[in-house]
Figure (cartoon, rainbow, N blue to C red):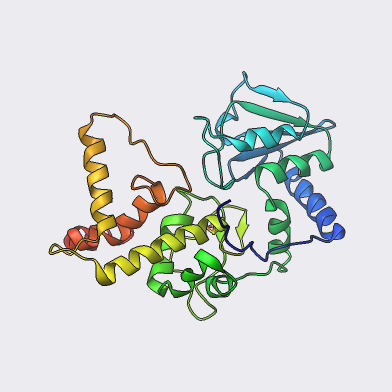
Length: 288
Ligand code: SF4
């Protein structure tokens, strides 16, 4: 079995009173807004005397949705994308559409939300209360062992680029609250969503490991044109895919960072390779 990154320290054992308080606070927050609240890609609407109605935010006006009354149906809903791919990161903006949940009370609402966005309600509540503990990158990295230990040597610049590539709203809807360390804030668009991210997740740790490998390559394996082996591998894969006539880029799976056509990996290349190949274009588009 492949080695896994150390689990986030987050909330190993949520005290029952915090879990209950977060459920009630979340329901009250939803009840305040008759049009409903967007939480990630889920629209949560209060239904007077009936409970709550949940659906994908883009399905707000749809009438032909598959209706579920059991909050545990959210587990299957959250598992796969619309294309049938496993979703390793539930906060990625790839929640499938076509479903609705009719839930008759606060406990069911909390169960469903926990499958759709694990720990999302509790983190939202603790952040609102000013009690959410934040673990910065360096602290998280210090806990890693085995093949993930090498992320301790990732440069600050590497952490910044990895966070921009891995954590912005285009690929993760959580609001990034952690920093490189207490004196080095992340310089990125942290997102506008309601779900806080208090600590680098296992997907980020795995991506940081790949970025560290890229950094090492750059120190010793550059060719005459200044390109590293993995940069050339990515460029070849992109050209071959484009030349094959496929209308749409067929990305590698979300957590397959060893594959050239991984979306986060390509986002990282946009940050690091485009400036190298085309400095003027990078200067024109400093935020891209
Ligand atoms: S570390 Fe980044 S990718 Fe992971 S949950 Fe937080 S914001 Fe999302």
